[in-house]
Image (tube, rainbow, N blue to C red):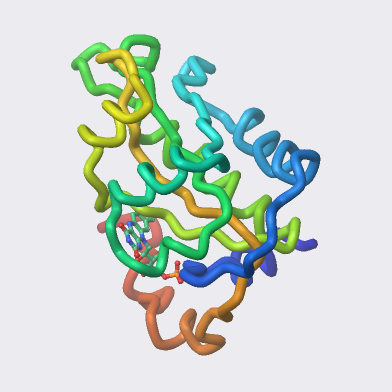
Length: 173
Ligand SMILES: Cc1cc2nc3c(=O)[nH]c(=O)nc-3n(C[C@H](O)[C@H](O)[C@H](O)COP(=O)(O)O)c2cc1C
């Protein structure tokens, strides 16, 4: 599928069918994260696929909103602040790299007929403790993934996005 169409088809899916995702399909989606670019090619990420109970329920409890209940799988996208690239002024590029990898995964999911929703408003400390993460590993995004049971608002790119003339400038501020 053309990339712009794919990007426009992605939406925050918050309701999933009661249908597991087969491993091959999921591995294909995760491959898009694996090949994502990262600063200095540090690849400071780990994708923890959670699809077994009772762990899945525990991870969902880090978010707490009821809509997540229907997700058959949650990918916990973790960043490694030790291996991520730091600029000379100290700026850590881990968050940027994780954003790119997560978006690759979210777009590949659409291409595979799956839905996802980024979740950053979760209890990261609790999540790290449940998964037994080492201190340098930060769980940054919960990405519930599954076959969609809802649809995106077809008007959202007109009604819920800033227009080009508000966000694009040519040659000067
Ligand atoms: C970095 C990031 C964090 C987000 N965190 C949450 C979240 O914690 N809970 C939630 O329901 N949606 C979350 N979202 C989804 C956004 O609200 C959503 O992408 C935005 O409203 C645009 O809608 P759309 O994804 O359907 O196009 C997050 C999205 C991004 C990119």
